[in-house]
Amino acid sequence: MKKYLEVAKILFKAQIVYRFDVAMTMLATIGRVLFAWILWSAMFGTHETIGGFTFQSMLMYYVVSSFITSIDLSGGVSGEVSSRIRGGTFSKFMVIPANPQLYFVSQSFGASGYYAIFAAVATAFCVIVFGVQPTFAVNSINIVCAIVMVILGLSFMVSYHYFIGILTFKFMDSGFFQHVQGAILAFLTGSVIPLSLLPNGVLCILKFLPFTYVAYTPAMLITGQSNINDAMFGLMVLACWTIGSIVVAQLTYKRLRIRYDGVGI
Image: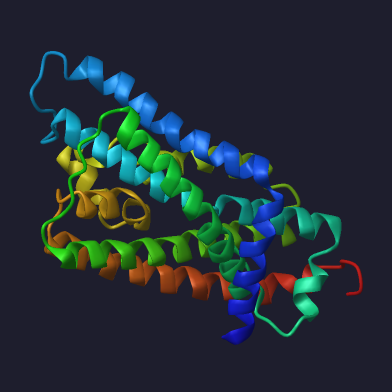
């Protein structure tokens, strides 16, 4: 465990070099809230509430979900793994005394910790500039469950993207799939619109998928628009999917690694 903590620390410090990426992440956070402010200002012009949201609670949802989305850097894992396999440099992770999957999980969490600092600054900026009235859950248990869900959700997303990346052992170019699934995941995680606005039948199906609990449900818990029952059900579903994704990725890696002929292998 200590070596994975060291990986996280190294990646945390390494982000200092990527000032442009950090700046763009902050702008993306502000951009998502700006998009919500423009869109929902027009929608709420003739309505008091939409789907159980007031204008202020809608903005608060986007503020929180944008922060969570900003610290989710798992999307880069599939690209890095895929490019390293194609370039022949993935052999580094096959010879060091560390599990490749846990290495990338630690790497992602280390980078996310650094980005979280600036995402918090961007979030505070949005609250002030757009006049958002901060509203949080009265029950502190909801907040704790939301934090646990975010950590578990990020772990799942890294494992998911790691799995997509190692498929390059078999399919040499997974770039198209990575591009397409990115837009789909943005919708399924609730980054585009709150999923509660969808029909009940669709929402019932999504509740059994893990993506709902990456950003949407934690944001709803933090803003006090979901209850402890939603939290417990979500943690159970997400835990099952996370464990499943880890197991599937490990089995896939062990099966496909024999196809690899990278540098030094």
